Amino acid sequence: MIDLVIYFKRAIFAVLTIFTIGFSSCSKKMPEDGPVYVPPVTVTPVDKAWTFDTTPTWSDEFTNSGAPLASNWDYDTGGSGWGNNELEYYTNTTNNANVANGVLTITAKKESMGGMAYTSSRMVTRGKLDALYGRFEIKAKLPYGKGTWPAIWMLPTDRAYGDWPKSGEIDIMEHVGYDQDNVHFSTHTEAYNFKINTQKTITKKIEGASTTFHVYRVDWTPYAVRGYYDDVKVFEFTNEGTGYKVWPFDKKFHLLLNIAVGGDWGGAQGIDDSIWPQKMEVDYVRYYKMIEK
Figure 1: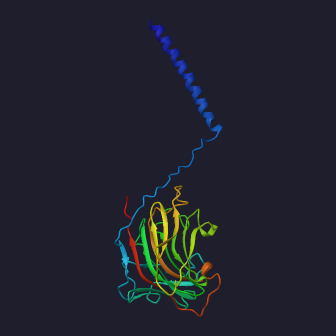
Figure 2 (figure 1 turned 45 degrees about the vertical axis):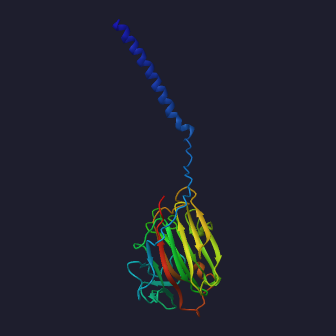
Figure 3 (figure 1 turned 180 degrees about the vertical axis):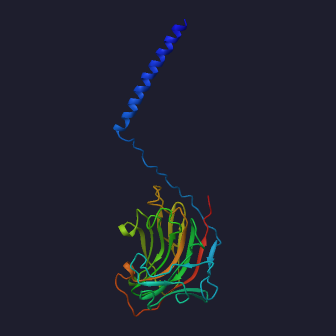
C-alpha cells in the first residue's frame, strides 16, 4: 500500500514538472511576440468653478517712497540678452525702479552699462510670492515707441520639469512699441511655444494702453489659465490632462515686471532712439488665493 502511494506521488510530481517546464518555455518565447501595448493614461480635468478670496492674500499698493519694498520684490540683473537678444542691462537700483505718489515706475533709459546700450529693471516676486493657482491682478500704464517691450508675466519658481519651455510660462501682458495698443496674452509649454509657433495666444486692442491705466489679470486653476483685460475675458487655455508637456501649470510660479529694449520681438522693426527714457507705471499688484474645492 505504501509503495502504491509513493508511486502516485512520483507520477503527480512528474506531471507537474513537465507542466512547469512547458510553461517556462512558453514564457521565454513571449518577448518574440513584441511588447504589450499599454495606452497612455489620460485624466480628463473637471472644471470645479473655483473662486478666489475677495481680499488679496498678497499685495503691493506702492504706498512707500523710494526703492520698492524688499519684502515684496527681488530683481533679475545683468545684460545677457535674456535668450531674446535684448539690449538692456537690468539693474536693482532706484535708477530704474522707484516708488512715489502711490505708483511704481520702471524706467528704461538709453545709457551704457555692462556692455549694453540701455538700462532697465526686471522685478520679480521669486522668494517673496510663489503661488500655485490663484488670481493675479495688475493695474498698469505701458511705455510706447519702437524698441520697447514691456511685460507682466509669470515663470515657474523651481522649474520641476526642466528649463524653458518645459516648466511653462504665462504672459499676462506683452506689448511691443511698434504695434501700439495691441496687447498679447500667451502661455508657453513644451508642446505649445513660440519657438515652434504653437503657442496659445491672443491679441487684444487696448485703446490708450500707454496713456491710461488698464487692469491685466490671470485666473489660474487646475482646469484652465484664463486671461482678462479690464475684467473682460480674452483668453482661455484648458488642461488637456495629458501631462506636463502640455500642462506644466501644477507647480508654483512667481510674477515678473519688466521693460525689455529691442530683442527678437521688441526690436523687430528697429529702435527709435529719440523716445528714451520710457516707463511702465504700476498702480498696484494683487494676488488672491484660489479657494479649494
